[in-house]
Image (cartoon, rainbow, N blue to C red):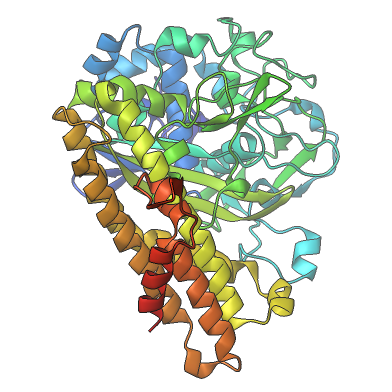
Length: 554
């Protein structure tokens, strides 16, 4: 494998284009072959990036390349690989033997992630590669969130931006195609202590990976741009490699010239112009299954359809409310529900116990898109608790109930906070972000309550305790009380009855919140016992509830 300058060949598989934090605190550009160890014996900790994704596009490329070129045959092979990173020499041989490197050069005979057929299109600025770069309409409305027009981009940054455009491509105007997992798809990355552990944690076994496509192995099938397709590739006529290497956008870069990268400030070869055309491959996201993306299951007329979760559909502020769906499933396989990414499912069911990790951190990332418009990013890293498969069903049921009950309180807090501060007729003019922030703050401030609760329930079940015995009820009651008090406190922090023109409106809103906190519906959702009256379960406005709410109001 050739050495040369850091940008030489501009090859995704062999070039040193990956800016990486090493274990000695230094930052260095490395090649794919060095993600386990560098040639100087340093350990890469994580990959870095200069785009708004913070390096997630580069990380996804690494996962896709390793998934395709060295998937583990068995779970034992995966476990061995987790604790034994490959040397640069070994990984270099694997790359060479794959025969794929010649197809991944940015300016080669088959330019990577590009379509030479658009060479006759009019040239436009390289800034069109960037998802957050504004269009003319956005500029005219002064809605630019990127903040600058980029005219010259260095080779590593072009490689990153081009790949990100292809894998996250949002829906747009006529002929603007999206990725196999939709426009602005949500990704969940399992994080390890090193870059290699992170990459390897997100790799599926060979049989499971190949089953996501038609199992073709020839380069012309594996690499979509060798024979650029403009039809609708499906898993029945294309291999699973398209999930990481698809090219829904038809793009061609101009040849590099000397200059200064306006992103990094580094002198060297830069790209200034690109050409683009519409009507690339039309991937149907309900047919493909991306291993890093969580999915919805919708059931209509008895038929279950699986659709990828998108960044634009995520609630404002990723938090423990997303425990269900990002880490654990909801609903059975043949019914409607949500399910985590395939890699997360594999970790939860087997790999967590195999690696003896009590918790695992998951990085959530997506571009938040509204059709062609990119509004921003969704990004968060959260710890998730390892639960033995023997008690996972009981644990998941309890967590699901708690999340649903807390979600009801979050919605009520949001609604009543707005009603207390604004006249109902004026609510439609209140910015959506205001209500979103109320809910986001609530979930953030209740997270320290949920984490120890989850661990106590896990330990109780693992120790042989029943999911419905008094110990669990006591834990649920304590959590419900603490979460309810948090809702009341946040309402009082935002709403001051003495600073409003309508005190009655504040009193009524607070009373409604209290009735919800202590009412039967929320208690029932949490899994708590509800007082019976005359042999029937009370409503949320039982005498006991009214008494408790009255005490809180006074």
